[in-house]
Image (cartoon, one colour):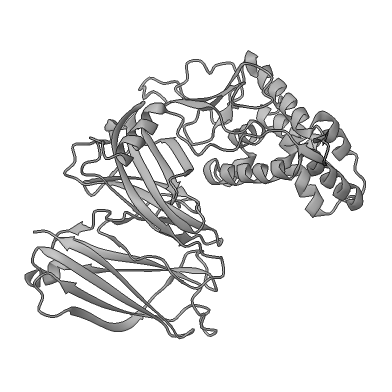
Length: 505
């Protein structure tokens, strides 16, 4: 019986870096199984396989990084972080996927070309047990494909004028596999050349003058994940918006928040929101793109992903998660059809990074659209918490027929020993419009929901709503303010949040 190719490949990879479980402690075993394995030359792979003790492993790792230099190690760790945040596939870390492998070794590509899977009604049925690496029977399958192009002048040590690296998503499930063709040997050649160049010892040059002797140490140049859009047309749309010349920045809005995942990771979800009055449909765009610039106007983050507008309650949105340290930024995000920008908008961001054990709350998020999804969202998915999806009302415009929902993430509240849960009270106050006095909701107990799904210390969610229709007789069109007072009765902490919004007819 022939074993599945996936199993054979996985077994071969595991064997290439296998060490005796009795020889090395888990700390060192994981080094050989982790992202660093992709950087090893063939000689280093052989050396690692034959290590006999932790001391030998410790020396190997120290020499491994010393050959590459501290700068390379820092930039490699940045690539790992980027891959984990953008290329994760199910439970598999992004740095351990095929796209992660290529990014870690070759760096960011000069350009990326993407094609979506055609929607063909007579498409052949795909066997889920077949490997995407197979070259037989795949030519007529509908599939999404992306090609990363590397160029010699932009990728140091590439060793060839141009290298196209292709990935395919045959099952249309978000798992991108390196496309295996007769040209695949180019990948292996490029990877080995790059690893050999990066592993070359740093060169020291001594220069003697009449007054002093200086030493300059240089290591291999490394490309880091780009913070620029690869499409000139999309970048031009960003530049036009910055210059006040954009003609496609109408009736579209951006919002964001600062959240902490159940595993304690800080992240910033960003949403592009299109009101129902817009003529756009999901077919109007196929690419979501964005650039985040710091306070000095320097681009620090860019993305360009295949995406379509999601329609819910006659309104549309698309969102993305970015990772940013504390600071002030401006986000420019938009939608495009192919390489043609369709809409774009900007939003100032003021980010205050939160540590895993920090206490406090997120910003107050207002919505009229909270719903349950069929599957639980991945950790750090934008505005998604398990199966709960919140669509922030980015334009902050509601009607008296709306259910005004509010959401707050509560970070590390006090835990009652008797229940292993927080004890939280909330008071609401609605003011504005033509109200002669605020409409209050008295301080009362609420249930805080653990984002991890289990009681105990960590991150919690508070979500509730106001039925505007029940008080519409008191509400006239105008500007309003919602104040939310949160009292943690265990830790004796009090948090006061507020958010302005508008009510139309």
